[in-house]
Length: 355
Image 1 (cartoon, rainbow, N blue to C red):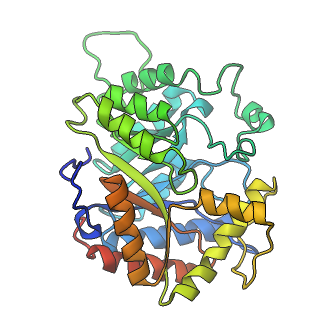
Image 2 (cartoon, one colour):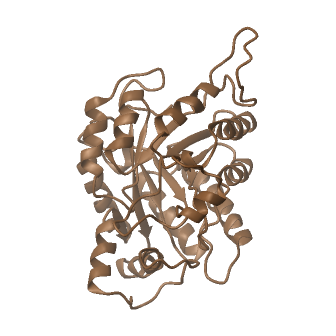
Image 3 (cartoon, rainbow, N blue to C red):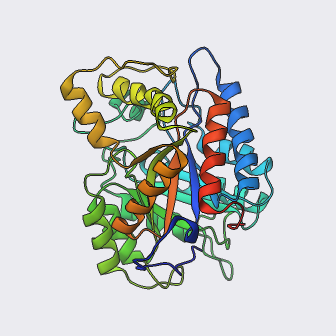
Protein backbone atom coordinates (compact mmCIF):
# COMPACT_ATOMS: atom_id res chain seq x y z
CA UNK A 1 0.00 0.00 0.00
CA UNK A 2 1.15 3.61 -0.41
CA UNK A 3 3.27 5.18 2.30
CA UNK A 4 1.30 8.08 3.80
CA UNK A 5 4.21 9.45 5.81
CA UNK A 6 4.24 12.74 3.90
CA UNK A 7 0.52 13.54 3.99
CA UNK A 8 -0.33 17.19 4.67
CA UNK A 9 3.31 18.17 5.26
CA UNK A 10 3.66 21.72 3.90
CA UNK A 11 7.45 21.34 3.74
CA UNK A 12 7.30 18.94 0.78
CA UNK A 13 10.38 18.88 -1.35
CA UNK A 14 11.12 16.79 -4.40
CA UNK A 15 13.73 14.69 -2.58
CA UNK A 16 11.18 13.63 0.06
CA UNK A 17 8.45 11.97 -1.97
CA UNK A 18 8.15 9.07 -4.43
CA UNK A 19 8.34 9.95 -8.11
CA UNK A 20 6.74 7.64 -10.66
CA UNK A 21 6.29 7.38 -14.43
CA UNK A 22 3.15 7.37 -16.56
CA UNK A 23 4.04 5.95 -19.96
CA UNK A 24 1.65 6.37 -22.89
CA UNK A 25 3.86 4.07 -24.99
CA UNK A 26 4.18 6.65 -27.78
CA UNK A 27 4.33 5.47 -31.38
CA UNK A 28 6.41 8.12 -33.07
CA UNK A 29 5.97 9.23 -36.67
CA UNK A 30 7.37 6.58 -39.00
CA UNK A 31 7.80 3.95 -36.29
CA UNK A 32 5.75 0.96 -35.18
CA UNK A 33 4.06 -0.40 -32.06
CA UNK A 34 6.86 -2.96 -31.87
CA UNK A 35 9.43 -0.17 -31.52
CA UNK A 36 7.23 1.69 -29.06
CA UNK A 37 6.86 -1.28 -26.73
CA UNK A 38 10.58 -2.03 -26.95
CA UNK A 39 11.30 1.59 -25.99
CA UNK A 40 8.87 1.36 -23.06
CA UNK A 41 10.67 -1.67 -21.67
CA UNK A 42 14.02 0.07 -22.12
CA UNK A 43 12.70 3.12 -20.26
CA UNK A 44 11.27 0.95 -17.48
CA UNK A 45 14.60 -0.80 -16.96
CA UNK A 46 16.37 2.54 -16.73
CA UNK A 47 13.65 3.91 -14.45
CA UNK A 48 14.23 1.00 -12.09
CA UNK A 49 17.94 1.79 -11.96
CA UNK A 50 17.25 5.49 -11.44
CA UNK A 51 14.95 4.90 -8.48
CA UNK A 52 11.47 5.64 -9.83
CA UNK A 53 8.80 4.25 -7.56
CA UNK A 54 6.25 2.84 -10.01
CA UNK A 55 5.71 2.57 -13.76
CA UNK A 56 2.15 2.88 -15.03
CA UNK A 57 0.57 2.52 -18.45
CA UNK A 58 -2.73 3.95 -19.67
CA UNK A 59 -5.61 2.45 -21.62
CA UNK A 60 -6.39 4.31 -24.85
CA UNK A 61 -8.14 2.94 -27.91
CA UNK A 62 -8.03 3.86 -31.58
CA UNK A 63 -5.11 6.29 -31.21
CA UNK A 64 -2.30 5.76 -33.76
CA UNK A 65 0.23 7.39 -31.44
CA UNK A 66 -0.35 5.17 -28.37
CA UNK A 67 0.55 1.47 -28.13
CA UNK A 68 -0.90 0.59 -24.70
CA UNK A 69 -4.51 -0.27 -25.63
CA UNK A 70 -4.10 -3.84 -24.30
CA UNK A 71 -2.89 -2.40 -21.03
CA UNK A 72 -2.75 -5.61 -18.99
CA UNK A 73 -0.61 -7.27 -21.67
CA UNK A 74 1.84 -4.36 -21.71
CA UNK A 75 2.03 -4.38 -17.90
CA UNK A 76 3.10 -8.02 -18.10
CA UNK A 77 5.72 -7.11 -20.71
CA UNK A 78 7.16 -4.39 -18.46
CA UNK A 79 6.99 -6.37 -15.21
CA UNK A 80 8.60 -9.38 -16.89
CA UNK A 81 11.54 -7.28 -18.02
CA UNK A 82 12.18 -5.58 -14.68
CA UNK A 83 12.87 -6.81 -11.16
CA UNK A 84 11.74 -4.40 -8.45
CA UNK A 85 9.79 -1.42 -9.74
CA UNK A 86 6.02 -1.48 -9.21
CA UNK A 87 4.08 -1.75 -12.47
CA UNK A 88 0.44 -0.96 -13.03
CA UNK A 89 -2.34 0.82 -14.85
CA UNK A 90 -2.93 4.52 -14.94
CA UNK A 91 -5.52 3.48 -15.68
CA UNK A 92 -7.83 0.74 -16.80
CA UNK A 93 -11.21 2.19 -17.85
CA UNK A 94 -13.49 -0.04 -15.80
CA UNK A 95 -16.66 0.67 -17.85
CA UNK A 96 -14.88 -0.89 -20.86
CA UNK A 97 -14.53 -4.29 -19.23
CA UNK A 98 -16.34 -6.91 -17.22
CA UNK A 99 -15.04 -6.69 -13.63
CA UNK A 100 -14.39 -10.45 -13.64
CA UNK A 101 -12.04 -10.11 -16.61
CA UNK A 102 -10.05 -7.36 -14.90
CA UNK A 103 -9.87 -9.41 -11.69
CA UNK A 104 -8.55 -12.42 -13.60
CA UNK A 105 -6.04 -10.36 -15.58
CA UNK A 106 -4.62 -8.56 -12.56
CA UNK A 107 -4.83 -11.70 -10.45
CA UNK A 108 -2.64 -13.35 -13.07
CA UNK A 109 -0.21 -10.42 -13.10
CA UNK A 110 0.02 -10.44 -9.30
CA UNK A 111 0.60 -14.20 -9.33
CA UNK A 112 3.42 -13.78 -11.83
CA UNK A 113 4.99 -10.72 -10.18
CA UNK A 114 4.00 -10.84 -6.49
CA UNK A 115 3.96 -7.55 -4.61
CA UNK A 116 4.66 -5.41 -7.68
CA UNK A 117 1.29 -4.82 -9.36
CA UNK A 118 -0.98 -1.75 -9.03
CA UNK A 119 -4.52 -1.52 -10.38
CA UNK A 120 -5.44 2.06 -11.20
CA UNK A 121 -9.04 2.45 -12.37
CA UNK A 122 -10.71 5.22 -14.33
CA UNK A 123 -14.39 5.93 -14.83
CA UNK A 124 -14.36 7.65 -18.21
CA UNK A 125 -12.02 9.51 -20.56
CA UNK A 126 -11.45 13.15 -19.67
CA UNK A 127 -13.74 15.76 -21.20
CA UNK A 128 -11.47 18.51 -22.54
CA UNK A 129 -14.28 20.97 -23.13
CA UNK A 130 -14.50 20.01 -26.81
CA UNK A 131 -16.11 16.61 -26.38
CA UNK A 132 -14.69 13.31 -25.27
CA UNK A 133 -11.22 12.20 -26.21
CA UNK A 134 -10.73 9.70 -29.07
CA UNK A 135 -11.27 6.11 -28.04
CA UNK A 136 -14.48 6.91 -26.19
CA UNK A 137 -16.72 7.49 -29.19
CA UNK A 138 -19.87 5.39 -29.77
CA UNK A 139 -18.24 3.18 -32.39
CA UNK A 140 -15.33 2.33 -30.09
CA UNK A 141 -17.70 1.71 -27.19
CA UNK A 142 -19.74 -0.64 -29.36
CA UNK A 143 -16.61 -2.46 -30.53
CA UNK A 144 -15.64 -2.94 -26.88
CA UNK A 145 -19.11 -4.48 -26.40
CA UNK A 146 -20.15 -1.82 -23.94
CA UNK A 147 -23.90 -2.01 -23.61
CA UNK A 148 -26.45 0.73 -22.91
CA UNK A 149 -25.84 2.41 -19.58
CA UNK A 150 -22.14 1.55 -19.45
CA UNK A 151 -21.20 5.24 -19.41
CA UNK A 152 -19.57 5.16 -16.01
CA UNK A 153 -22.69 5.89 -13.98
CA UNK A 154 -22.56 2.36 -12.54
CA UNK A 155 -18.86 2.69 -11.69
CA UNK A 156 -19.35 2.24 -7.90
CA UNK A 157 -21.25 -1.02 -8.48
CA UNK A 158 -18.63 -2.30 -10.93
CA UNK A 159 -15.86 -1.35 -8.51
CA UNK A 160 -17.58 -3.20 -5.66
CA UNK A 161 -17.97 -6.29 -7.84
CA UNK A 162 -14.31 -6.14 -8.85
CA UNK A 163 -13.10 -5.78 -5.27
CA UNK A 164 -15.25 -8.71 -4.19
CA UNK A 165 -13.48 -10.99 -6.65
CA UNK A 166 -10.24 -10.43 -4.75
CA UNK A 167 -11.80 -11.52 -1.44
CA UNK A 168 -10.96 -15.02 -0.16
CA UNK A 169 -13.71 -17.63 -0.35
CA UNK A 170 -14.46 -19.91 2.59
CA UNK A 171 -16.33 -23.18 2.49
CA UNK A 172 -17.93 -24.48 -0.68
CA UNK A 173 -19.35 -21.22 -1.99
CA UNK A 174 -20.59 -21.52 -5.58
CA UNK A 175 -20.35 -17.81 -6.36
CA UNK A 176 -18.50 -16.59 -9.43
CA UNK A 177 -14.79 -16.71 -8.68
CA UNK A 178 -11.70 -15.03 -10.14
CA UNK A 179 -8.86 -17.53 -10.30
CA UNK A 180 -6.15 -16.23 -10.24
CA UNK A 181 -7.27 -13.22 -8.24
CA UNK A 182 -9.18 -14.63 -5.32
CA UNK A 183 -7.48 -13.90 -1.99
CA UNK A 184 -4.78 -11.68 -3.51
CA UNK A 185 -3.96 -8.19 -2.30
CA UNK A 186 -3.65 -5.89 -5.28
CA UNK A 187 -3.62 -2.17 -4.42
CA UNK A 188 -6.50 -0.38 -6.12
CA UNK A 189 -6.27 3.30 -6.99
CA UNK A 190 -9.04 5.52 -8.27
CA UNK A 191 -8.07 7.94 -11.02
CA UNK A 192 -9.98 10.94 -12.22
CA UNK A 193 -10.31 14.65 -12.84
CA UNK A 194 -13.44 15.49 -10.88
CA UNK A 195 -15.09 15.36 -7.52
CA UNK A 196 -16.71 12.01 -8.32
CA UNK A 197 -13.50 9.97 -8.08
CA UNK A 198 -12.21 12.09 -5.21
CA UNK A 199 -15.38 11.50 -3.19
CA UNK A 200 -15.50 7.76 -3.91
CA UNK A 201 -11.80 7.32 -3.08
CA UNK A 202 -12.36 9.11 0.22
CA UNK A 203 -15.47 7.09 1.05
CA UNK A 204 -13.69 3.78 0.40
CA UNK A 205 -10.36 4.75 1.94
CA UNK A 206 -8.40 4.24 -1.28
CA UNK A 207 -5.46 6.16 -2.75
CA UNK A 208 -6.43 8.80 -5.30
CA UNK A 209 -4.61 9.97 -8.44
CA UNK A 210 -5.64 13.15 -10.26
CA UNK A 211 -5.11 13.63 -14.01
CA UNK A 212 -3.66 17.11 -13.59
CA UNK A 213 -1.13 16.50 -16.38
CA UNK A 214 -3.86 17.28 -18.93
CA UNK A 215 -7.01 18.19 -16.99
CA UNK A 216 -5.95 20.42 -14.07
CA UNK A 217 -8.98 22.66 -13.62
CA UNK A 218 -10.56 20.86 -10.65
CA UNK A 219 -7.35 19.62 -9.02
CA UNK A 220 -7.25 21.67 -5.82
CA UNK A 221 -10.98 21.31 -4.99
CA UNK A 222 -10.77 17.57 -5.66
CA UNK A 223 -7.78 17.15 -3.36
CA UNK A 224 -9.56 19.10 -0.63
CA UNK A 225 -12.69 17.00 -1.07
CA UNK A 226 -10.67 13.79 -0.90
CA UNK A 227 -8.74 14.76 2.21
CA UNK A 228 -11.71 16.28 4.04
CA UNK A 229 -13.97 13.26 3.56
CA UNK A 230 -11.39 10.48 3.79
CA UNK A 231 -12.37 7.46 5.85
CA UNK A 232 -9.55 5.20 7.08
CA UNK A 233 -9.73 1.65 5.75
CA UNK A 234 -7.81 -1.61 5.83
CA UNK A 235 -6.04 -0.35 2.73
CA UNK A 236 -5.02 3.08 3.94
CA UNK A 237 -4.91 4.83 7.30
CA UNK A 238 -4.50 8.34 5.89
CA UNK A 239 -5.28 10.07 2.59
CA UNK A 240 -2.73 9.48 -0.13
CA UNK A 241 -2.91 11.65 -3.23
CA UNK A 242 -0.82 11.49 -6.38
CA UNK A 243 -0.82 14.17 -9.07
CA UNK A 244 0.12 13.91 -12.74
CA UNK A 245 2.68 16.37 -14.12
CA UNK A 246 4.21 16.71 -17.58
CA UNK A 247 7.96 16.85 -17.06
CA UNK A 248 10.59 17.35 -19.74
CA UNK A 249 14.15 18.09 -18.64
CA UNK A 250 17.04 19.00 -20.90
CA UNK A 251 20.34 20.80 -20.53
CA UNK A 252 18.73 24.15 -21.35
CA UNK A 253 15.27 25.68 -21.14
CA UNK A 254 15.23 26.24 -24.89
CA UNK A 255 16.03 22.61 -25.67
CA UNK A 256 13.35 21.34 -23.29
CA UNK A 257 10.73 23.70 -24.72
CA UNK A 258 11.51 22.46 -28.21
CA UNK A 259 11.17 18.83 -27.13
CA UNK A 260 7.81 19.73 -25.61
CA UNK A 261 6.41 20.79 -28.98
CA UNK A 262 5.82 17.12 -29.81
CA UNK A 263 3.38 16.85 -26.92
CA UNK A 264 1.74 20.14 -27.85
CA UNK A 265 1.22 18.90 -31.41
CA UNK A 266 -0.32 15.70 -30.03
CA UNK A 267 -2.73 17.71 -27.93
CA UNK A 268 -3.59 19.98 -30.86
CA UNK A 269 -4.43 16.90 -32.93
CA UNK A 270 -6.68 15.73 -30.12
CA UNK A 271 -8.70 18.94 -29.91
CA UNK A 272 -8.83 19.17 -33.73
CA UNK A 273 -10.34 15.66 -33.86
CA UNK A 274 -7.33 14.26 -35.68
CA UNK A 275 -5.38 11.12 -34.91
CA UNK A 276 -1.68 10.82 -35.64
CA UNK A 277 1.56 9.36 -34.42
CA UNK A 278 3.74 11.46 -32.13
CA UNK A 279 5.36 14.13 -34.29
CA UNK A 280 8.96 15.33 -34.15
CA UNK A 281 9.60 18.67 -32.43
CA UNK A 282 9.30 21.88 -34.39
CA UNK A 283 10.76 25.37 -34.13
CA UNK A 284 7.41 27.09 -34.71
CA UNK A 285 3.95 25.88 -33.69
CA UNK A 286 1.03 26.43 -36.03
CA UNK A 287 -1.91 27.24 -33.79
CA UNK A 288 -4.57 29.87 -33.32
CA UNK A 289 -4.65 32.12 -30.23
CA UNK A 290 -7.72 30.19 -29.03
CA UNK A 291 -5.94 26.87 -29.44
CA UNK A 292 -2.86 28.18 -27.69
CA UNK A 293 -4.93 29.37 -24.74
CA UNK A 294 -6.71 26.02 -24.45
CA UNK A 295 -3.51 23.99 -24.69
CA UNK A 296 -1.65 26.14 -22.20
CA UNK A 297 -4.53 25.86 -19.74
CA UNK A 298 -4.90 22.11 -20.08
CA UNK A 299 -1.13 21.52 -19.89
CA UNK A 300 -0.53 24.03 -17.11
CA UNK A 301 0.66 21.32 -14.73
CA UNK A 302 3.95 20.95 -16.54
CA UNK A 303 7.59 21.40 -15.61
CA UNK A 304 9.65 21.96 -18.73
CA UNK A 305 13.19 23.29 -18.82
CA UNK A 306 16.68 22.89 -17.43
CA UNK A 307 17.16 20.92 -14.19
CA UNK A 308 17.01 24.11 -12.10
CA UNK A 309 13.87 25.35 -13.84
CA UNK A 310 12.16 21.98 -13.39
CA UNK A 311 13.18 21.70 -9.74
CA UNK A 312 11.71 25.09 -8.94
CA UNK A 313 8.49 24.37 -10.79
CA UNK A 314 7.97 20.95 -9.19
CA UNK A 315 8.66 22.26 -5.71
CA UNK A 316 6.09 25.00 -6.32
CA UNK A 317 3.49 22.43 -7.43
CA UNK A 318 4.23 20.23 -4.44
CA UNK A 319 3.87 23.16 -2.04
CA UNK A 320 0.60 24.14 -3.73
CA UNK A 321 -0.96 20.66 -3.71
CA UNK A 322 0.78 18.90 -0.79
CA UNK A 323 0.79 15.81 -2.98
CA UNK A 324 2.14 12.60 -1.51
CA UNK A 325 3.55 11.43 -4.84
CA UNK A 326 3.95 12.73 -8.37
CA UNK A 327 3.65 10.70 -11.54
CA UNK A 328 5.33 12.24 -14.54
CA UNK A 329 4.59 11.94 -18.24
CA UNK A 330 7.02 12.91 -21.01
CA UNK A 331 5.76 12.66 -24.58
CA UNK A 332 9.18 13.11 -26.19
CA UNK A 333 9.74 12.11 -29.82
CA UNK A 334 13.35 10.95 -29.59
CA UNK A 335 13.83 7.96 -27.30
CA UNK A 336 17.33 8.96 -26.22
CA UNK A 337 16.10 12.45 -25.35
CA UNK A 338 13.26 10.89 -23.34
CA UNK A 339 15.72 8.72 -21.44
CA UNK A 340 17.93 11.73 -20.78
CA UNK A 341 14.97 13.70 -19.46
CA UNK A 342 14.08 11.00 -16.95
CA UNK A 343 17.72 10.58 -15.95
CA UNK A 344 18.08 14.30 -15.25
CA UNK A 345 14.84 14.24 -13.25
CA UNK A 346 16.07 11.30 -11.18
CA UNK A 347 19.13 13.35 -10.22
CA UNK A 348 16.78 16.05 -8.91
CA UNK A 349 14.89 13.72 -6.60
CA UNK A 350 17.94 11.89 -5.32
CA UNK A 351 18.55 8.87 -7.53
CA UNK A 352 17.63 5.39 -6.40
CA UNK A 353 16.46 6.14 -2.84
CA UNK A 354 12.89 4.97 -3.71
CA UNK A 355 13.70 1.24 -4.12
